[in-house]
Image 1 (cartoon, rainbow, N blue to C red):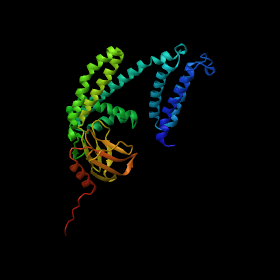
Image 2: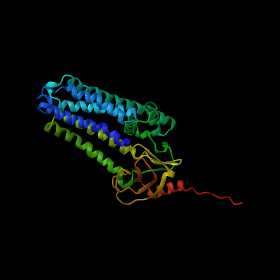
Image 3: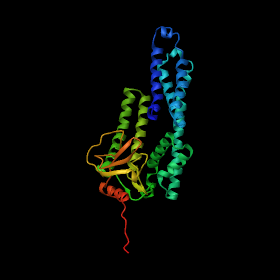
Image 4: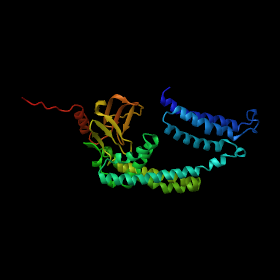
Length: 336
């Protein structure tokens, strides 16, 4: 069994036990002694013992297994609050109150991200280092290569371009030449217009939900929408400052806030212009904001499941020519 399939087993297990115990608690038959055997510890054993064991058995990376275990247990608490009858809840109310701990951890995560942003950018400006590397180094030093590290890098990158975008300069990124992509098909201005539309509708939608649904739901949705505005603002600022670059014998694709993708030049079988729509596929990686991607890269050896990469850049001819020149460098022969 492949690792990809095995990694999905814990989620499937959570779904199965949720459906089973939901049916058990809501039934009124000999199965649960006509409601007299609706013990909460039955679901508790599966959610807090069996589920973490399944995670650690199916996921090789123990840090990832621990993270998924915590997330799935929190989901199980939420599911249990609906399926377990109120009169049978003894421990569950205390578990439900744990949502305040989750909120506190989320705030701690955000504060940590912002402090790390400040320190990373301060070092990057002082030493003129690659801003991406200055963010990744301190995080991966303590967390290693993990999903948590990748999420925190993305989070810090977002706050970097939200708060300190003027101090991040394209020339500080490693590599040469650099290639831009923000002007293709008006991507930069379209993204700004999208930000204005979302920001404009926030107060209107808040009032609508406040009176039609509930004040609490209105506050939650407004906060989430405001956070999405910050994300799009960071993306708007990043696309004009994070270039695609040739770094030695590698092509480094930085696209907005996306995690950079490094492709060895010798693994590029073919690079050519593209003028048609490219459908979503597991074997195709797409980097494009508006219109059709104008460059297609075919890999000699797949990178994971990726066999082909399509990109939208401002100057496709210059981009293709630069890659071809690295693949086939000109050699000068000296006449005797």
